[in-house]
Length: 187
Image 1 (cartoon, rainbow, N blue to C red):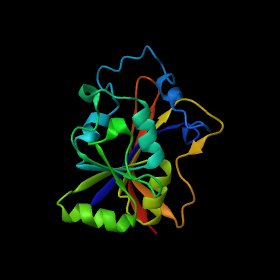
Image 2 (image 1 turned 30 degrees about the horizontal axis):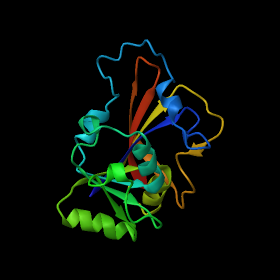
Image 3 (image 1 turned 45 degrees about the horizontal axis):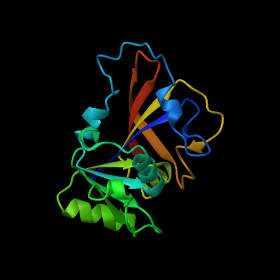
Image 4 (image 1 turned 120 degrees about the vertical axis):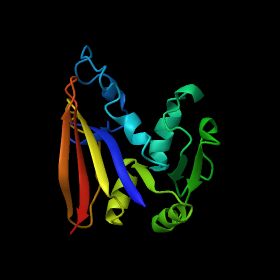
């Protein structure tokens, strides 16, 4: 199964403020930029390429806090798993959309692959780091916001081995966000 990361960070590599806030994503960059050619910076194209999503508990809680109405739900009807050793049920507003999982990540990926799923979207800093440490990530897309937070939750935690990012493709958007897509090779 192909496992891909698609995430935004500040220019200095943080995915959230120290308290988990991501409001800065909506205020960074040029607000008056003409984004009509690619308003979501490729997210719809990416989400249409995946058939399942695996996220961490904190990521799920952030999504839950948005209270996204059904008609605006960005994840279509893809299977979504949230990793947690402490929660057994998702928040009320995500019931029926998210299934909780506690256990071995390789076993989950194998289970999804056996079900015929081909491409997983991996989200959440700790979850991404865990997947990299298990050498499961094949592709990484990072969209950098033109903003320095100076402190916060970093995208990557402790990586247990060298990881080579290859075949870089980049896009500079009119709002000054820059997106880089890499294939991943483990050394």
